[in-house]
Length: 321
Length: 267
Image 1 (cartoon, rainbow over the protein chains, first blue to last red):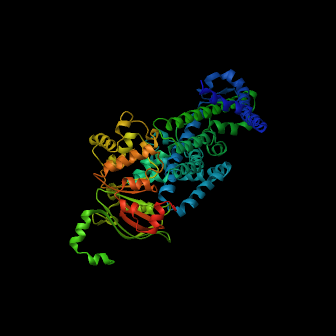
Image 2 (cartoon, chains in turn brown, orange):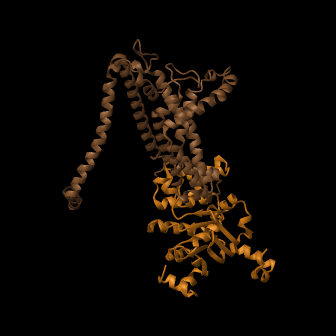
Image 3 (cartoon, rainbow over the protein chains, first blue to last red):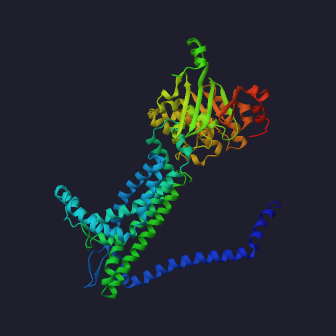
């Protein structure tokens, strides 16, 4: 009983607070409210815009192929598949190379080289995505068309169905490569920061046991930094799913399910960008917005899953940062 | 080869007996960070199965000195060493580095559990070393017992080491170092982040493991040096001012500087 009295007192004091404190609280809450309202607004507008198509095609839109603006038959499956293929293809390339690069910078390069190399890689992040798109369209795609894709078609095509395509240049392969290049600086920079934050004592704890560099890096340093590394991959995946213009310029365009890596197709974001100007009916427009709604939901779901993944990593079996 | 006065005075016979008495011998050690000289002509010996402590104010070079004993300074860019460090009469600079560091274990100021379970923290080093997997869980238990940690963690070996208290983490690091059976254990201010209970547990532990291990400890806590060590050296500005048995250092220091430091006039 006696002990309870002092416990309640600070709370009363806090509630009374100063005038400035109250204004501050109201202001902060208002700002948070605005941010939430913007999200709710975007979601509402997308749902309303997509509503006619949702009513007409229902969930079948997600599993049907076919994109015929004249007869108003729409199915988004090829774009959903395209989005996932392009995003995860690019993540696969950029994730591996990016993590290796970050480890190389922090653990292998001499200190005087670390800064300049990091800066050069960060510079890649400042290039606008439309410039990447131009590079992909004018440089990378013709290069692939004349060299790599011809080789793949001749040597791998007869044996593997996924390589048995025509060398168009633009297509899934170009889009995945361009997107991977765009994701690299994000992954390298953020993973590098996570690796640099590993305390010197933890590193030396490994070397003090007589472990070799390789064992210290992959057994201790990378696991220690795994929250930051996974965080960088999540951010990159978010970007990969939503990247629009560079993919739209390099993926070639197509309405059927991809059969080979050299096929042309669309992702959800790029189909909206490329078709938006050619909308000929309200239902066509609504179908495109339905694509946007699907993309929005995919992004939110991926981010929520990533949130739980990061939380799990820092939980019982992980290491508190 | 540089010839030293001591080499001339000493016959081969006495060199051998020195190697038997002293686990570690340091002769004329100079240490540089780039152009800055951090240690000046340090010569000192550490007796086998004894605790040798080094005290001194921050930045006096005592940690730098400790790090040369298992060549940990080589992880610092621009660090350079001159002079001799002998382990059982053999220069540590001639030994293979990972093998040296298994013989000369080290525990750091901040406890550094790896981002793994309690069990894996100790097992990882053993497994990398190629210890047979059927022996590992026995060795883990044995090391945790030697570090007086077994009773506290035996039911949560699979849990993350980060859930342990600071003192337990530090004892885990000691257990990890002991798992590979080192001949020498170096401790760099192992208790500076611990509360008095955690500190006294570590100190008790040190007195137990010196039976099987030669211990060199760096501390800025003079009482700690007085409590646990057999020999004490006092560092100031990169020089070893005085080295003697602990009782003499604290009761009848021969240098005015040592006396000023241990009576709290600076530091």
